[in-house]
Image (cartoon, rainbow, N blue to C red; front, side):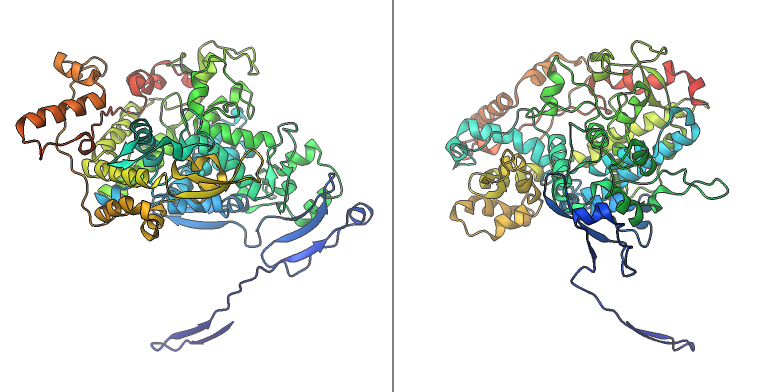
Length: 630
């Protein structure tokens, strides 16, 4: 490095020559298995400039892995966010972020094609995921401080934070286009055998693995979490839930994949920020010479297999589905699985930080509503969210929908109970109305969601662009294949269409918004119809909305007018056929539209909990025992 500075104003100038390196500097420490047991491990060399070390170690099964710890020489890193300001990134979260699976989110726009309407809405799922992780930690630390008797641990906080970081890791191209309208239109194309005048023969898909019934992006998130751990050389071991993750390859040493307790404070008893602490080399070298005991695990908060199952459960908001079954299908089943991560009933509120099944008010919605308002509508500040975060607490609340609540349906038979068992009640995250303002703040939050769905998410131009993107993907689906390995054996190479890329994590990792560029660059003759429609999209020759009919409902359930009720009960395809029939009567045959020309969409917008919105969103103000919040 060379620097020259002339400090004599006003002709101050600086010259810097900065050197970059292509090869990562790593101090390698070779530990033969016998030597590791008979003699102390060598001291870490002084050249560990980045706090990285490698250990060559032989596991009990005989496999040799090249393992490393976490980057930590410069302590906590920070990134600046336009919504939450400076966000700290601890070594553990950095290790997760610096994986291809997490970095893939940089290539997925949060709002799909909303930039066709609002030019600034180009943010990615990566930004949103960081924001959700930040809010999850902030919410739990606030509750931990106000209600220490809840026993919220550092491991609880870091697990929920990681769940927030990874909750959207399973999204496909253009976000909800892929797991929403694309899959819906795919069923129609498969049934009709044609799409936009092009053959769509089901034989294109013969011999390929089938997509599980009810698949959604949350199912892909669970798959991608496992794939992320595999990339780090780790795997969840269901036979040893309370031990470190199973080491299956080169990567992060499972015995240092964690954080220290925050109460390792200074002399004055002040807690040390856990983000600034990782395991030292001495601790790791000690672990390489002996088995971890429960005490050692507690001291350093190593994330166990149970913790990672808990992280996945927090993404789902409840028990994980059985293998090979989607989350949606699992919820329909009469047999409800048990939670594994945190079985104590007094920890059940942790499951509703990222995905709140009781009120619908969670940190996921908080973050995206703030971001979307800033980018699309130029809103500033945090509105009611600040008051909601500051006043949140945990208390017993009456379940608003026992028929859909997994906790009620399970009848608490697999949850550890105490003498304080209360049927139909749960420990929930609530917002006590102490000064008569929280009702307004919470309802403002849901009204904000309702308003943004109308003005941003379902804007007519945005919706039209969504359908056009969907048609481009459908025209390309039979002919564009993505390579990936069979998830069952991990060796058989598959060539999967876009619609089945989620079957293999390797294929799904390659699927981003850039798929449109791949279609544009392709010279495949059979992709020409898709390229032609893509040219229209790039020229902003978008589909047009020709009309809409609002359905009046005073109470949010029954439709006010009989003719509108008949219209609402009709299938979308039936409405489309009637439109075509009426148009054919008014115009000559040459100009009359066909079924290909008409898209009909029935849409219901609510405040966040569908038909249970009013009853559930206000539960906290009627049944909460505020004594637990003080």
